Image 1 (cartoon, one colour):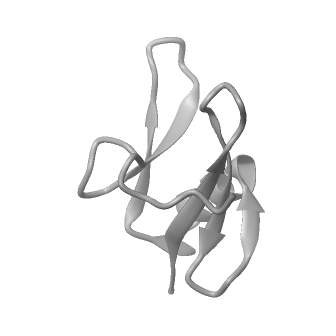
Image 2: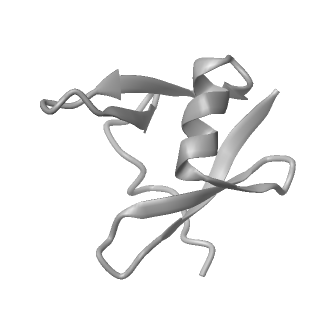
Length: 70
C-alpha cells in the first residue's frame, strides 16, 4: 500500500499535491479520494469547522515534517 512521502505547496502555503511511495504525484483531491478508499496508508481524513474534508497524517497534526518536492 502506498504512503505519502513528500508534498508541494503553493505560494500561499497550501498543499496542492503529494508524492507517494510509488513515485506518483497526485492532487490534494486525489489524495483525499484515495485515503477515503483505503488506498493510501498513514493518513486520515477529517472535517474542519466549515465542514470541509481535509487530509492529515495519522501520527502527526500536520504535514510540516514532510519534504517539499520543489
